[in-house]
Length: 171
Ligand SMILES: [Zn+2]
Image (cartoon, rainbow, N blue to C red; front, side, top):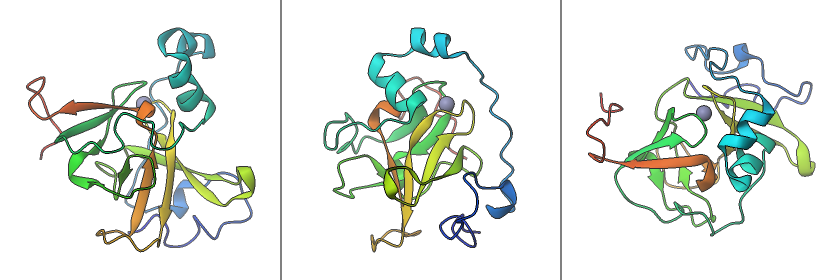
């Protein structure tokens, strides 16, 4: 059931991860939100655009959610899709908001990223294909998955529990 089970980190042959190599139970649909580059530029701030649409990274310890413990749901800043919950957020002290799991299977998708001379797994919003951050494993954090979803604050929007009367992620 792990996205790391076979080929995500071991895959040297291709740039993108075939869906079949991920959790077989995860059925990630094609992104349903498609906008032109001009539309994204108009709707997002320059910093949001840089991170979400150009796979940029905010400077560590500068994001608004690094140390946030507020209960709630983290939505995609670009499309509003619910991606993470405060329940799975933990203090990694790495400088970015860190989660040990996404809100649900299929809310994010994974791309093999070999930029900057590193083997990493990029995490994108499954709904609009915007860049969120990267996921790492086996770092020894005492979390249930031993995974760290290292996500840019600027890619997220926290909706505190009860803020709008509709925290529908609870099941
Ligand atoms: Zn999105």
